[in-house]
Length: 185
Image 1: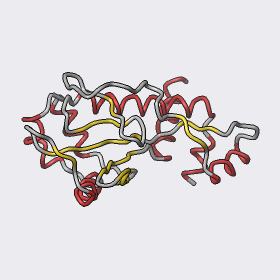
Image 2: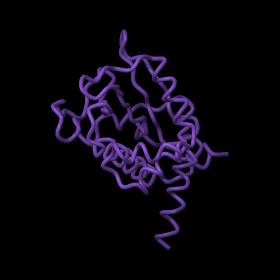
Image 3: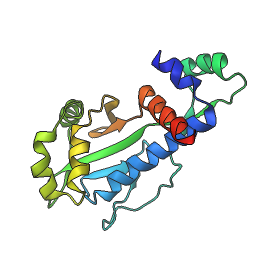
Image 4: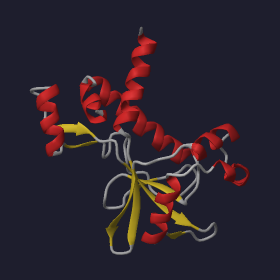
């Protein structure tokens, strides 16, 4: 049912919702201003720099946003959007994590798996500690920590090189579409 509603969203509106979500996720991460969380532009490990850090900025807003459709997407589009092209806007945002403040080191795959598990939990109890170390407003931090993310996957991209990918869920895309329709009426 969720996937069918997702594919029922008019393509131009869906593309706009996804682009805005990707842009906001990227902005949130870069605004954290830490070298321990880096956005990846591509699977080769090119990163987007955080303000005040030396990692080169080589990505544009549209990097890794377009991808080819899966067979399931093609089948559903044949039903809901006949004649549509073979590319789709990608909701995946790839993130590299590091640990340590003075000389950050990359996480192991097992550590990424732990992060993945933690992302599905309500972590509001840790808000006081996070607020002490973040530039984000406390209300924003609490909201982030209570938000459970089930659309994530730890991935190995090279020997001893891992990332976590997050994506917009079909149900969240539908919620955004419904809110957009409500405010446009």
